[in-house]
Amino acid sequence: MNKQRMLSRWYVPATVGLLMSSAAFAAALTRDNGSPVGDNQNSQTAGPEGPTLLQDSHLIEKLQRFDRERIPERVVHARGTGASGEFVADADISDLTIAKVFTPGEHTPVFVRFSTVMGYRGSPEQARDPRGFATKFYTSQGNWDLVGINWPIFFIRDAIKFPDFVHANKPSAVTGVQDANLAFDFFAHTPEATSMLTHLYTDEGMPDSYRHMDGYGVHAFKLVNAKGEVHYVKFHWKSAQGVHGIRPQNIPTSIGSDWNLMSNDLYGALKRGDDPKWDLYIQVLTPADLDRFDYDALDDTKVWSDVPERKIGTMTLNRVPDNYFETSEESAFAPSRMVPGIEPSEDRMLQGRLFSYADTQMYRLGANYNELPINRPRVPVVSNNQDGLMNASDRKGEINYEPSGLSDVAQSPAYKPVQTPLRGTTQQAAIHKTLDFRQAGEYYRSLPSQDKNDLVTALSADLNHVTNDDNKYTMLSYFYKADADYGKRLAVATHADLSRVQAKAAALSDN
Image 1 (cartoon, rainbow, N blue to C red):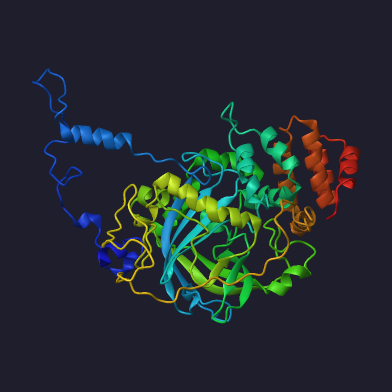
Image 2 (cartoon, rainbow, N blue to C red):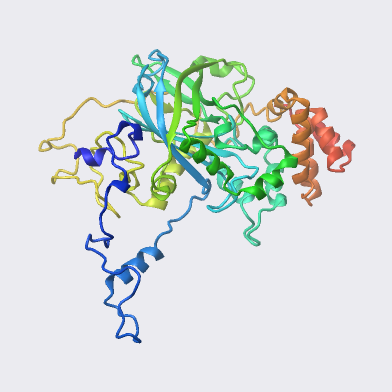
């Protein structure tokens, strides 16, 4: 494969000096076919007063391209900002995985896209919303996408509920405006969201900067070593800049001053050389460890609270991309993009994301989206996939099938995923150990007094918009079940009948 195709400007830090700035080229303005544009200010007309001519192919092409500048925006994570950098591994975890990205001293180019979840492409960046934290590692074994958010947990534990979760939290299908009644109607019937909602309504639920938030892979993944041994891990990006959020009373000023606060902050830091860093930590469990908890360890609404973390590397973002559309908009992340030594766990939410994320990128960008420079691996891609819209893979030869005795493609032992023993029968049933409320209470009790006050202020403000009485009291009972003080304070702030809240909470299961 041509080396120029394999390496793009996204993969090499600007300091390497191998890439030329576009300012170094003094080329004349051209049309898309490369021919020069004579006049870019005046259309061809039939005489000085006549109509514009259809033969003005530059005019026609310019308008055609302008009419087609937009692609479908992401259903979620539409409002995003990206930056380039590198990850440097600094711990030997060869006992856990054969993934070369974790070889001590290995430098791996990365592209990171931060985002809000529910907002449209031009929406304010300051919103009470989880923040996407998606990292594309251009490793020597292919691309690995670690696609997460700024919290270690999520609202739901099964991907079959994801479209419903999004529909309830997106703008109303009738008014086009987000409605707390719809959101809390969904959450009132989704008790496993209690812990994530408690996290979301703290000050950290409104980060003041992308630099000042952590990132998490959320789900458990499998690491596989050279012996085929499996360990379950969770990934945590820990901000070297610290974690800071905006208090409820400061939110109006923050939103009013700059709708693009988080992008401007990130790009401003990069332009002045204040490169943000995140250390990557992992938590590790053996397969035998999974059953020692009184909750399901693969439930993505749970944290592994008593499992220690170990640092394995550091990521530094050091460059603003040259073109927003070709990076932040055309970048395509999918948790199914893994490399040898990293595999998915049985987490039900992750299992659905393995399909959904790659499928949505194929819808947005076409079947050949991985050929775009921002998505292209830095290693050769050899496959029998072919054709389709915008294909430019430069595949050669007529042997587009396998097996074949005529092919000159070298055969080598492929990495084989680890074999996972299965048990049980085909079913559709909830997990057995739900424990929906306890970790929400533990998190609430861990908060300083001011943070508890801000949580109650922010959450009660939205609960006061809920007009369905049953949904309101159901939500209050969830928070009371998590922690009695938490529930009492919310009941007072929402002018609710505490005895009714307590009665509903008493009827909830502890499991």
